[in-house]
Image (cartoon, rainbow, N blue to C red):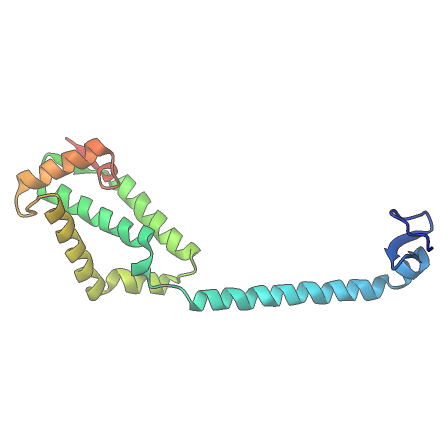
Length: 171
């Protein structure tokens, strides 16, 4: 029966097939091992770059990223409420911070500034956002042409401390 070691001895470092490789063998092949590690590292970096490029190509449209699309809707609704109701004022600092966070999230997801600008300046997306706002008003029984309705909605959002309410302040 052969002697199988469970730990390296003083004269060996590596156990392979019941025999230990002597230190001289390990050190003589250090240059080759370094080259191999370099190639493996380079291959991993290349694979990560290809994967990242593939993921970037597979990004969904910004309208399908809920955190971005919903965030812009909330800012737009808060803006309409503050414009239509004299009893409610905006929190411009909070709104600006929210818009910057939305933009940074889009950048972190791999969208370019040009893609973000195209999305926010698109007439199609603006129309779609207006339709979402109209559905929100209808679901809450609000006529956006009536200041009293907008004020009531604004006060309710502030009281709930909702995503819209944190962007508003009652005077």
